[in-house]
Length: 467
Image (cartoon, rainbow, N blue to C red; front, side, top):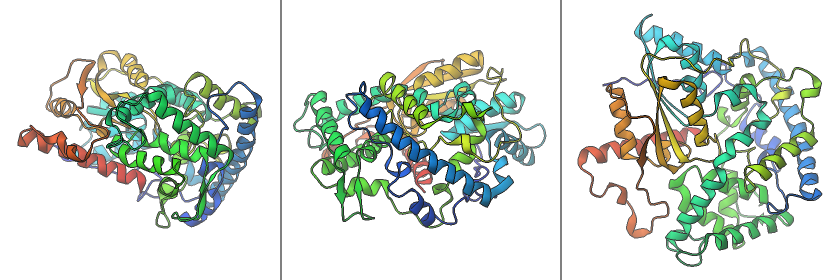
């Protein structure tokens, strides 16, 4: 049996000092309303990236993006000052070490299960390499390439993160096609060609790129842009349990009613909400390398070129769709640097191998392609074991697998899985009305409890991120 303890990292939620660059979420909402930070970059068409039109559009939007990021940074400098220097991951690792010694003594090991940020930034790549002699049982779920994270400027991160995006989108379209209209309203009939479904979606994106869709009756009077609609599709792909709902919202928008879709973008939050502020930048801008000279600060043309490179070489559908789900970039204007960045080594030897959980087809928002997990697995050689879960999602809990959960439970009991073990999910991604609750059919009471517990943890994590 294990006692579980969680904590809010520096700058986040209840831990002081909180990142509060804006006085309230209302002020923040006014600041980003109808800008590239809220509506995301829009391109006239993702199918024609060779001409000058798309490049010109991206340059213009990048200029707005830069001005907004500069303003944010100046506001943070004024309202936060030197407190911003101590929110980087290396500092959080030292906090964990300090807390562990308080609870378990100087010689007690740090045992950990980290998901998302807690994987890359906490024990997943930082803590186990900074303090390899201090860790015991460690499970990390959803991995970012630590070398890329710590050595590349943040505006280049999507090029690596989106390497699985198109594969995930194909998976989504195939699942939609198999379900038919009864499960996925984006289809006309069951087993419709994925290319036909995709063509209708792209036609809609191209149409609202030229003429945004008015939304007079949403949670806020506004309009739906192509960039916003596209990023909302991208963000939904990491939460398979929400695919039916998000597909319905997209289908409604394609029929002329963008209310449901825009409401997902403009979900009201109580004021003030720390996570609505610049919490993420408070961390990532201390982890990413600062520019060493003015020549290293990207111009609007540089940003546009990087987005085009990502669209052409990695993900034509979602290469310009990162500024909401992954609100990075602009770190070149961040007003502070941390006391000490950790950049290497990433090949520590551990007394007990760390367990890495990795989905086969992950996608956006904290995007972590499977190659990132393989990178860490290879860097740490005999100090890791990897479980590959066959399914999409932000992490393994997005579609909980009984196989994965049992292996994790066994790991904490002292049994290591074979490296590269694969687990299926058996999940129905667009269930019809008769398939509700079918994931528990045929399971004994113990397995049902394990699977429902994993689903409950997933919802807690998802609610926390949305809050």
